[in-house]
Length: 142
Image (tube, rainbow, N blue to C red; front, side, top):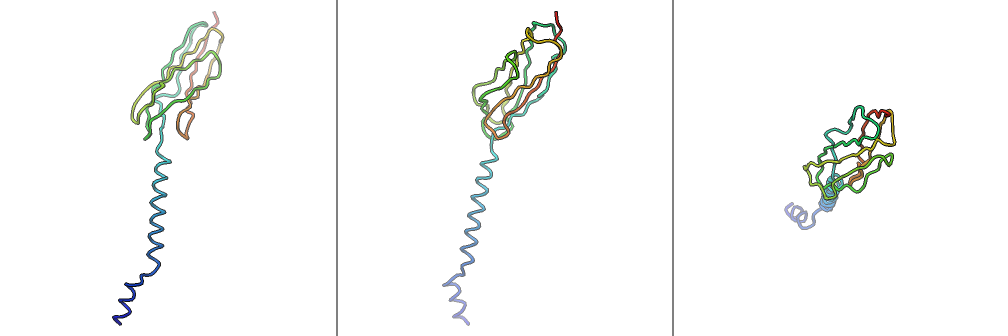
């Protein structure tokens, strides 16, 4: 009887090798999962704004504050607007996790009138990109 017990220790079952292999796969999977989900995230305080009523020819300036609520630095790469009457200023440097910053939208009303409803797309380094901000208002003819 003692001989069988000693032989089990000398020749361990192959199940242990499979267990270690499964554990290794789980650890690698968790590492890559965390890496995939760790990214920048742009969260706006207010993503929709109304500039009310303005006269044609006025410049409307709107500020959109945001926070990088992700775990990696946020880098804005470009913006897209619906017409040449809209300009966007954004930070060129990376925004660290937890930091706040702002995007400034300048809307020139000299070539538009009546009801306006515009969307600005902001592209940055995350799978959830682009972020969208929106503004509305009414431009009176002179």
